Amino acid sequence: MGERWWCLVTLCGVLSATALANGSKCDLYSGSWVYDDSYPLYDSSKCPHIRKEYDCIKYGRPDLTYLKFRWHPTHCLLPRFDAEEFLKKMSGKKIMFVGDSVSVNQWQSMVCLLHAALPSESNITEETINSTTTVTYEDYGVSISVFLSHYLVDIEETEIGRVLMLDSITDGDVWKDNDVLIFNTWLWWYRRGEKQPWDYIEIGANIVKDMDRMVTFREALRTWADWVDSEVDTEKTTVFFQGVSPSHYNGADWNEPGVTNCGKETVPINGSIYKGGVPAAEKVVEQVLNSVKKQVSLLNITRLSQLRKDGHPSSYNAFKGMDCTHWCVAGVPDTWNQLLYAALV
Image (cartoon, rainbow, N blue to C red; front, top):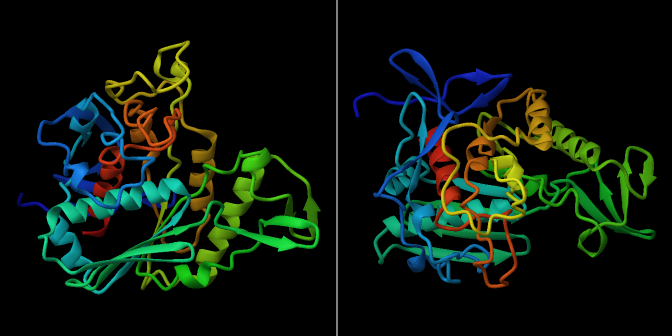
């Protein structure tokens, strides 16, 4: 293709991945899913990096149609992922995904995309240290890490118990040492009981037992935004924030009232409209990103992923539990990485 696609357009003050086609604006995030028999981009059975939560085919998923859909922006083309071009472009750089298990989901997709394209004799190493797992492509000097951080802000052990510190980020010194950062948080903000990893919340000079979770989410994102503005050199480090990854437990959101999970879904929603609307958390993300003074790009996966009610593991995972929150690998996260590829390459 003779023309090159560039990420140039600013939407609501946030850089979003867009393209120019014949001089007109083209939003890579606006479109629909189309059947494409050349997909998937790799055979998941040959990828050694997939967690048992996301390895849907290994755990018995019988329908494979969900692998055959390609994201098609309305007025332009999303470049096909080219592993060699990506690694050459990123030569000598460190890439880090920072966030919860959805970040792990995307990281695993990325390393599977690269694993499938590289020759078997490639020099690839993997190591895990504390919260960070890193795969290094020694032949290119490229490392791709995932740092597990459910809230981005800190949780500290104190005399009164575990405290969620809405004004504090201490892991940032590890993060800012990378050349590309892709952040995410949302999945854990409404967890309660035994699944809640903190006992109290500290905000400013106040310590409370609990507060409105959407408010805590917003405050944490504001702390993250302040950290970017004060600590990250965006001339050196490219920063993305991943939009909220949707779940599919309410069939009314896709015109199937009475359906309570994604277990029987085998195809995407036809078209570009999701009846359930944009999640409130995504609106918060976009509002906070709009306040960041430095350059931060929104990896706007929310709306296109809402259309993929078929892309979740459902019961096809090692635990046999109904999971309509995470995503099969191979699958939808490959498209997230194609969008990231389009923005970086």
